[in-house]
Image (tube, rainbow, N blue to C red; front, side):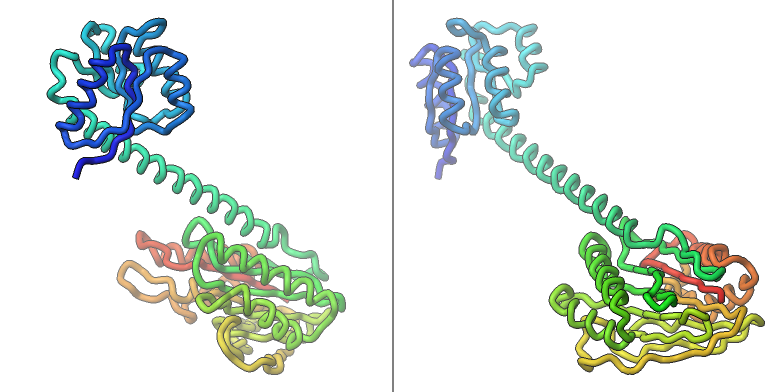
Length: 380
């Protein structure tokens, strides 16, 4: 079955145009064609149809092939343009090719016309595929730029000045954007809320879900609800957003105004630790509820409570720190993370966080970071 072909022929000789059509039919095409012989006819034909290929004589009344090429390119930059002439010389042919023509043939030798058209049609299809891939890449880069911007706005810019306490957090995404989340913000009672979370996946979707979580938590805290009320409402609000393919682990801790008590809820998140001034682990904040997005009780369990003393240190992590692997596939682990914080505990919170994340990067070495890594330290 012959290949359908919409061909525009720029030719003042009807006989020569019919010869071109006959050669295309002989070469396996079924051409639907229009012949134009001047600039006005060419302009009208370009407005009427989107052509598969343009065949042009070189010299026409009031226009030549290079001028015709300019008119065609102004309308369709990708359509194959082949010059078919009996008088064009090598210099003009080279100039036409530099101007964007794909090929030129002599009217005295049209044996390769169909082959040239087939080749240029394939090249045009390949160009369109490359352009589509480039557009998709640009769109992806723009999506990542937006996601990075969203994520930058999620994380605290500066640690809060809170009765002289020392607070810091940092996150290292595995990709251009990550699914980890941390935050610290005051509550109406004068206390401080500290959050660490992990949204499954990477990219714009998780970044936007993180924005949802941040907005819900900050808004619900303002009405001075209990931790159970806050997390129960967040679970309900996120039910539609998360769908069936994503979930969020979350550890939400609230320090009272005097920093004597810490209450927390852990929804499927790795344990957090309370460390005494001598480095001893006083308490672990283990998971007591399913991650958000995973079926569980409608109401969250009662929060855990921990008494704090001056000099205590609170450490929150995401699983990217704990599960980071060396090139030998050894896991970094909770014990190693705690040991580093114990060793560095006398330093400011920001330096402890950086020392821990630096140690994880060194442990991973030349291996690729598989997950986002986040750490938060609060020194009371």
